Image (cartoon, rainbow, N blue to C red; front, side, top):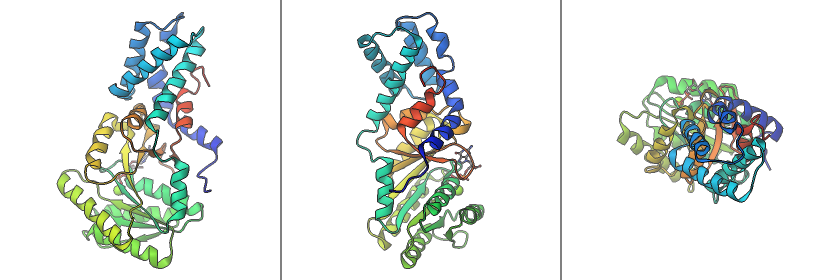
Length: 323
Ligand code: GDP
Ligand code: MG
């Protein structure tokens, strides 16, 4: 079984990446607790404000509050530490129930090993971190012994292919490039075809994300998807939608829009390191029945981490009294 990283290293990176979100969600928690032995409405109101301003989203926040109220009415607590434990478990339950039925990370990695080439199409609006994510994925798959090829199907801007080429060099993987303005579906087709011919393992296809002409973009993604399927039935095996966590609730809106035209099978949430809006991960897991596959916690090649709900929640609570 292919392992991305070891758990200990994982936890440390994610903890650090969530510093700002943790501060935003729970930084004022101590204040609410002062001298309390029961949770009263004012405590729940404070917590609600905190979760909503941390971009957890209204629906998920209310569910968490309800779950907490129920849990605490059943299990008495005597200290702040115990109450934090209850909150930790409540959020953990909420995340797990949101992810019920979705494929786990290990199952995803198993699929990668079973299909050759395994084709992943990467979509999302401009600037969210698609190209960077592809570079990080390529590097990691390469280190895991997979033969990787990148397809530069963002042919709209010359700079886009150049940027992907830089990542290909850095990750030491092959890249398929056409001229600027070439048909993105043709690039995707050629990339998969050449991967088949060379017996390569993983194909990562970059796409354009311009939104000013949404209809055109969505049409283009559809065409890319179809052309990949034509050369390799069943492909793309995954379509990852990249979302910038720092856009908070807007990320949810983008996810709904893209889902209307492409079959999104996994999400990548980038830039968690720079934002206090990381609570959006909880909202996304709860509201979209699509697994968060990776999280981006920095600009370095190793800053793409598999999303593990347990590690994520533990990291959120790190230092708050529970951990
Ligand atoms: P694209 O337009 O979707 O392809 O986005 P790019 O890959 O070009 O990334 C846009 C910017 O976001 C770049 O400056 C990246 O370095 C930055 N970026 C991407 N992922 C992360 C992340 O996880 N953390 C941080 N801090 N920056 C990121
Ligand atoms: Mg790009």
